[in-house]
Length: 333
Image (cartoon, one colour):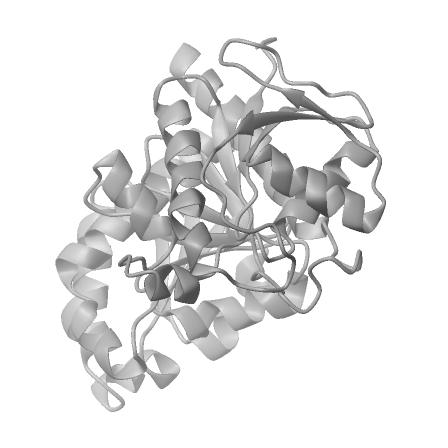
C-alpha cells in the first residue's frame, strides 16, 4: 500500500494545551499527513503567545496535507468565542463539538483515514447546557454503533475495559454476559483489523480479589465471566482467564499476550499509566473509523506556558497511522 495516510487532528479545548500541542507538530517533518481541525485564529493566537513560527496552510477536501517542517494544514472551523489560554469559556462548547463532528464525518466520508483528538473539558461543555460525557460516547452516537470499547496502549501493553466511567458500586451489575460478549468480540476483531494480529491472545481479568477464590470472594467469575469466556472460546478466540488482577500484570502472563481485558477503569488503567504515562494512547474500538487520543487532560495550568509535552500526541498520531494502514490492508486482502 503506497497511498499516504491523512489524519484529522482536533485541537480540543481552546483554553487547554491542545492547540499548542498541535503547533509543536510543525517543528519537524511528519510521516502521515495531519490536518488540524480548529479555528485558525486560535492557532495564530497561541503561536504568537509562545513565539512559535509556523505557516498555517488552509486545507480543502481533496488536497494533500503538508508534511513540511514549519507548516501545518488547517481545516478552519467557525464559532470560537475565546482564544485565551487557561481560562475556560462555555461559549466555546458548540465550536469544540463541531470540530469533532467535522473530523468524524470526514473519516466516514473518506476524506481522512482516521482522527486524533486533543483533550476536551467535559465540565465546561456541560456548563453550556450540552449533555456530553466524552469523546467516546459522542463518536459512538455519531457513527451509529451499539457498543464501543476503550483501550489504552503503550508500545509494550494494551488494556481494554469492559466498563469505563461507572461508580465502583455499579460495576458488578454492569458486567453481564451480553456486555462481556460484545466487548470481547470487538476487542478480538479490532486487534485483527487495526493491529494486524492474526490470532489475538487476550488475558481476561476477574472482577473480584483472587478472581473470586472459587466463589468464596464473589460469584461473578463462576456465574458470568467463565461461562461467557467458554462460549467465546468456542467461536475460536484465544482467551486466558479470568485471572487475578494482582498477578495478571506480570511478565509471566504479559509476555505471551496481545492485550488485557480489565473489568473496570481503575483495575487496568493505573498499571498502564504507571508503565507509560505521557507516551500512551487512548483508542476507541468498535467504530467504523480510526480514532486515537492522548492519555492526559486539558492541563489548563500549563496552557500558554510552552511547557506542555507532546509525547502522547505524537504516539497517538503514530498509532493512528499504523491502524489506518492495517485497516487499508485488511480491506485490500
